[in-house]
Amino acid sequence: MQVIDERAELLAVRAELVGPVGLVITMGALHAGHAALIEQARRRCDHVVVTVYVNPLQYEDPRTYPSTLDADRALCANLGVEVLYAPSTEQVYRDRGPLVRVDAGERGAVLEAHGRPGYFEGVLTVMLKMTNLVRPEAVFLGEKDFQQLALFRRMVFDLDVPVEVVGVPTVREADGLALSSRNLRLSPKERTAGLALPQALTAAVTAARAGTHAEGVLAAARALLTAAEYGDPPMHTLYLNLTDPLLGPAPASGPAWLLAAVRLGTTRLIDGMPLHLSSRPTKAHSSGLSARSAELRSGRA
Image (cartoon, rainbow, N blue to C red; front, side, top):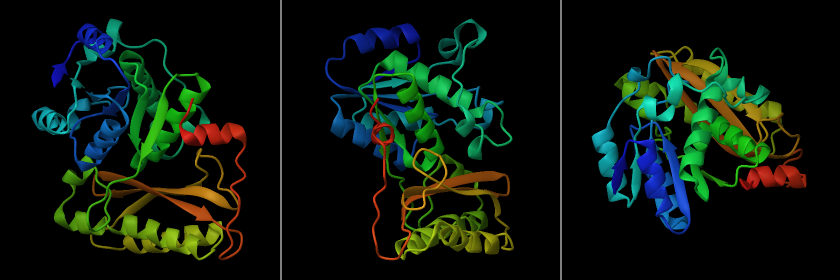
């Protein structure tokens, strides 16, 4: 495995790779969830490139994000990654930063971006830069960060970026908590309290399978999250939203996503689960996708 920290060297190495290339964009602190992305890329592509970079356009102080580059290097090498790109900010943002950034649109100003102006501008800008440098056939992203995945798909579609976007299901601990580097910040009591988040989403999925309408699905999740507000330690709900797979309004029936974020102490946790809404119990309904929406959902630009 080649570990590269300079843009020019990455371009030179990429020019020598023959065959489909898969790209996994990360901020480091890699875990089994990232490993699932890499393994999927290995199955689909001849070569895998992983990037590790904590983006200052997303975080005012990137030093607060855990740095585990030696462990990340070992994980990537064990999984057969051929190129690990871990650049400095000077390599990523030449000439003191980008004057032109990607506008994430109105769906990039809500949920994870609430109270964080420009957050997804920073996310999409660095993801587009990495995609342009590596020129992969496919980019592999986790469904846990579903808003990021949906916005990246939209950007690829709107800007005609020639790449396939592959969403990979969330990897969870045995007790259901979604894997995240943020879990390391939780105290043992907070870790236990955090289980209310996947439990609430699972309750909503169960309600949807029983044919419950959208409001009832939300109520099933909200009941558990509200109870957790009075726990020890308390878990504060930041948002609970039911959307279509493109982050639009939830459909009356068909595929949807339930997205949530909570705060335990100083730690923010996010999660989401797909579900299928039915207007009547036990009867499946067509999702009614237009050809344009179907292309976006497939991840094909």
